[in-house]
Image (cartoon, rainbow, N blue to C red; front, side, top):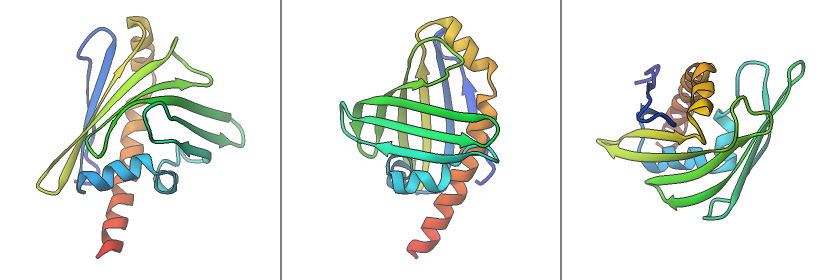
Length: 164
């Protein structure tokens, strides 16, 4: 299961969707993506980057803020609001980068489905326009997602092992 790549599709002219399976129950995957003390342990960013801010107010209307810093490349900040939360099945939130490479704000919907102790996470991002979606597609987002999810895989294996 580790090393599994995401599948990335474009369901509409304003959306990008991707799926990835994890060898862990969905409550663990959900917690790893929503609890700051867990998120900080795996969402490290590319080599050389460090997460300096990880704030999450996990409630409808609550906000999140994440910031990574690189000694030569500066700062990358991300923020948004939670619009819907159904623990541990679904999260809907907005997403806006401080220095975004696409126009406007996006809305993400993450669905967590468990079968046989494994969880498939499917995320769909809805952009304000086709041009914004296309700019996101031109970025190396699939590389970043694959690297981040590989780190999440390793982290989930570590906490599952620790729970034994």
